[in-house]
Image 1 (cartoon, rainbow, N blue to C red):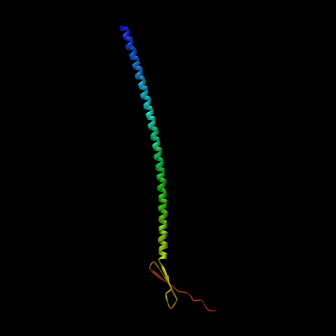
Image 2 (cartoon, rainbow, N blue to C red):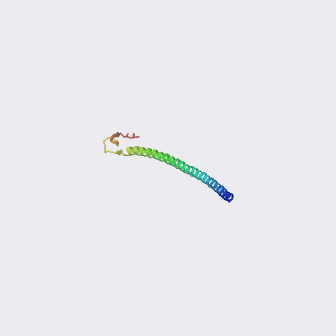
Image 3 (cartoon, rainbow, N blue to C red):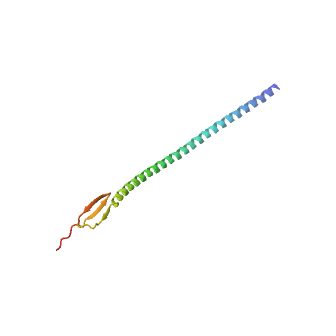
Length: 117
């Protein structure tokens, strides 16, 4: 009887070892799958982040170009404004001079009379 008990115990121990080995192998496979999944997700996130940063850089460059263009337009507008703020008037002067005021400075232009034939 003790041989039979020993055989049953040995068989139980052997089955238990096989079950434990199978469980260990299963856990190892799951761990590898999890690591693979994590690496894939990290790669996807890194790609999206790189694409986002590239788009952000492109937009920042576009904004800088637009700001430069607007600055130049403003400068041109200020120049045009300073020219347009000048006024010209034909004063009833004895000499028929044209008076022009530009940026607060007055200029007098004398007209030449046409010679009679």
